[in-house]
Image 1 (cartoon, rainbow, N blue to C red):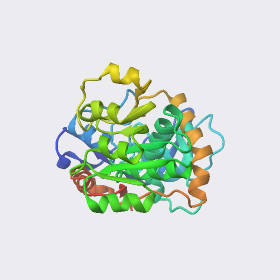
Image 2: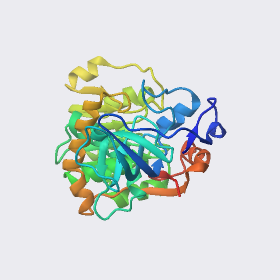
Image 3: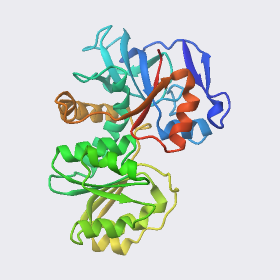
Image 4: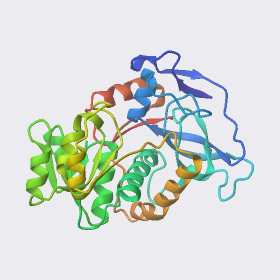
Length: 326
C-alpha cells in the first residue's frame, strides 16, 4: 500500500508518499481501507520530530480516519467487511489501509458522507472527554473555547450549545469569529485586539467562565485561571503557547477551581474505548439528527499531505483539513 512516511524530521517537505508493507489485523483489531484522514497539530509535531507514536503504534502520521472495513481480525464481533466506519487512531491514518482496535471504531453517522466522517473522531473524542467527562460542563454554564474556529473549537461550540451552555470563543480574525457565531457562539473575542479575561467577565456579570478549553498551555495559564468562575474547571489540551507556566495557587484556591491536562494518543486501549463508547452514546444521535456537524475547510489528495500541513501551520483554515485517498 501507499502511505505518508517521514524518513527524516523536518518541514512539510519531509512527508513522503511511499510504498510500504500492508498492515495485518491481530487479535481484537480491524483492517480499514482508508477513504480520508485529517490533519491535526499532533501530526505536525510528529513530522517535526517532537511527538513520536506510542510503542507499537503505526509509524505513519494520522490520528483519525474514515473508510470501509476490509478485514476483521480474530476475536472481533459487531463489525463486517464493507461497513462504513471512522476511527480514533494512535497513528497510521495517512495511508491507504490502517489497523484499528475494534473499541476505537465508530459507524459513519447517518446522513454523513464517508470522507467527511474523517473530520470527527479526534475532535469529538477530545471535546467530549475533556469538556464533559472531565470538566462536567452543565446546562446554563459558560464555556470559553480558545481557538474557536479550529476543528476542536468548531465541535466544542456545537456540543456545548447542544447541552444548553453559553459559549465564548477566541479567534484572530473577524471572518473566523463570524463562522463561530454561525455555529452558535455567544461571546466573540478577537484575541489580537481584546483581553479575553476582561471580555468574559464583562459578558458574565463578573463571574467568569465555568469551563475553559485551552490549546495554548503555558502562555495562557495565569490568565485562564483569572478568567475562571468560582468552582471553574480549566481543561488544557495543547501546548501551542509553551510547556512551562507559572500557576497562582492562591487564585486557584480562592476560586475552588481545578486544572486538568489530558491527551488521547498514549492512553490505554480500554480508556480510549470508554471515550469512544461515550461519544457513540451521546454525540452520534446529535450528528444523526443534524444538530451537530463536522466543519471541513477543504479536501486534498493524501499524496499532497505536505500542502495540508502548510495550510494548518499557517492557521488560515476554519475547521478541518481532510486528506483523501481518491
